[in-house]
Every structure is written in structure tokens, then in C-alpha cells.
Length: 87
Image (cartoon, rainbow, N blue to C red):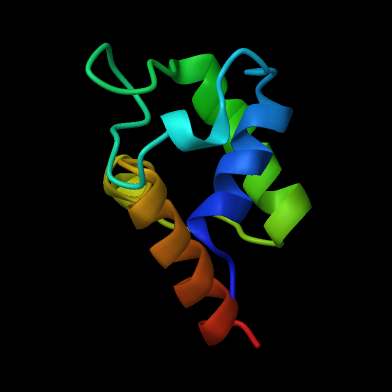
């Protein structure tokens, strides 16, 4: 089972956010936009690649991507659900 800390570490490493500490990213913090972590569309592509490479997860329904990528909590829920249903 993937935890939010596992995911946050991969986000920091994979997106080169070394100036951000793990505990600065709250589990329910928005990943995109000025109100949250401030990721952009290029980061979304990188994050998609990180999910595939590090967790073996693919986003199969791009219409749901906005909800999936909303916060660390929603992303971890998707990762764990995907892994469970694709055993």
C-alpha cells in the first residue's frame, strides 16, 4: 500500500522540488494552482510519468484526471485502488 509520504517523496524528487520539505505538503493540499503546491501542466505530465515508473500506475480515464490529481490524498487513493484492481 502506497502512503501519502511515499507519494510526496516521489513528487519532491521527480519534479526537482528540493526546496520543499515533506511536511510542507499537506495531505489535502491542492497540487495545482496558486492556492496549493503550484504545479502546472508540464508538472502534470512529469507526475504521470512518475506514477507509471515508480508505482506502475496509468491514468486510464483522462476525464477523471483533474479529480485524481487534486491532492496527495486523492492521488494515493487512486494509486492504491488501481493496484488493487490490477493484481
